[in-house]
Length: 450
Image: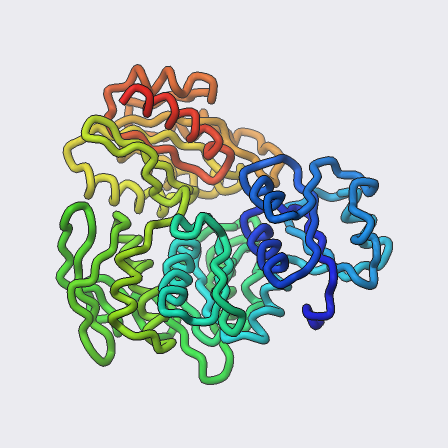
């Protein structure tokens, strides 16, 4: 399909973080864009400000009339939409051109020089850093992000259309639609077992992804992963390696050994060794693309981060509030490492909302082990997302396995009260569900206090 021949693009699930990036892309390229989503949000508000018509009732009568023309309209959908969705069923029955979000990205990557970021963790931060580096080096590129990059207050960075930066998502194997020139794999920890069944199938899927790279392309893999490629790592003998790490004024200062040279005294402002690893692979891909070292160093130091990725909400001498999207035990471990490195002598409270019944069931012991490391734990009910409840899989079950005795189940209405009652001076909200909606309330309450 030639996307240039499309006049209208209609999104079923336009408020999703990946879907809205595509919507912005089509608006920027002069297409007429509209869509449906279940609930209003900051994302749908920002799309409306761009002139995109968005509605929240699933009814064919709400679809704007230009989008009822099957010849001129492309329908993009997310796999998260429920069965029997009325608008989606209408589009199918009337033979519209219908593609998944991942298929659209596949079409875009076919016709561009593509840099793809794969891995069970770190995709959004790494692709955001990479997009920022390329933009600052004036590469004619578009970066499609799975989060809001603080430098641009957007999930789309656009500076041209010759090069694309995409997140290669392993969920439902959608990354197999991509055709990258340069790709990386940041991690391959077991996840999405509701899709894959077991970890070996997930690993096989990543190996299949590695074969999707265009001829003469390059694959980068984090040191220790069971796939061949250009390696990267921290303080090891990888092809690209971070060396001589120091912390100065809350920022990392370090050198990077490349296959050809050493880049000295680089600065990166996001805390945590996992973020340092993300910065390294973004830098390595930009170097291999051909960006000048001096510009890359300046760009790396100016990267501000991604919303909900170790995102500081309050940062004073007496009280720190951080929000993070972590929803897998390894991601929680990474958040814990970062917060202990930055605040080694402070009491830390983690407020966690588990995401998906299946993920909670599959990793219950690992979640308990990760959460037990914090000084205090508040646990919200499981956020179901696309799933129905599973018998016996509850936050109470997870709570019973957490070894830290300073733990309790809470509901959202009691969160502010529980934080007030605690002596913790560093508070973290963690999770991929709607816990993000509570952040503004906590921030408002404790900004006023401070």
